[in-house]
Image 1 (spheres, helix red, strand yellow):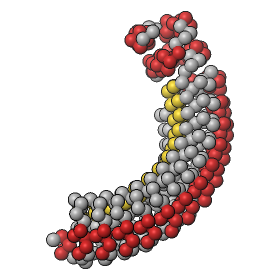
Image 2: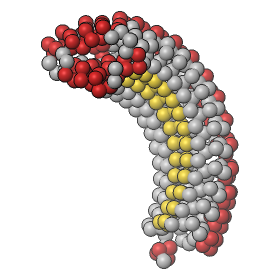
Image 3: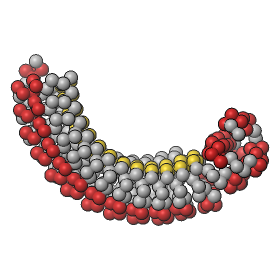
Image 4: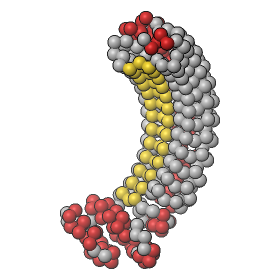
Length: 358
């Protein structure tokens, strides 16, 4: 049966006719994902509460018929321990933009689930049974009300993407270090003041977002994240950086803006793969000569600091295309900066002398 026939059935038949169709056609195979989702979208989102209530039992029966269902987007009334038991073949489940305040423990029975999106809900706690979801690869919990995380989360050994942004987390469990396959971790906009040393065990991590937290220091173990390519630390309370930061040899993008940094450590010159660096809105008064080692750097924002001099080695940034130096206390630029042959944008306004504008 082709998709055109399915569409005719879904869009023009009533719910009872669709259900009878499902009873007869028990071998829908790969078309079940399409059919069930379209049926669900059409009928389960109706504003007529009478229709909504009268079809609820039919949904449970329909789920039983769709025994090969792999993808599903649904809302709370259909999510309970009875329906979950019938969804054991699911690989993707989207529960976004509901008003979920809790999850049934039976969600841990979804042993084949690879993608789970629970963002934009009201979850403040997670059931420990979620640790049983060993096949899970992508988990989004953004925009909830989580203040703590499960220790059992460390058992999700195949997890590759974890989004915990826009919650109320004040600490991370040490078990997070067990997520050795993790490549993407978003902790933006929480209340973290420190990180566990075990975060250094995430050797496959490529992108880490810690922006908009309350971090006042970083552990040397951060330098063990050898695969890290993107690191966001903006809008924290950092006053210094650990020497281990220079070991992040794969790092391509680094955001340190809106902190309290007064010193730029020389070890940062070891970030040989760095292409984009944002250090604006800090308290830097000088830069180390080692900054000239960043030969791949294309974008550098040092605006809104307290810089009064630049090292001659700035002229060695041969790939630099955009340089932002406005709102500092610079009196002059080193002559070596004339060697920046690829420079396209240079911002110097609001410095110490008008001669910088010429």
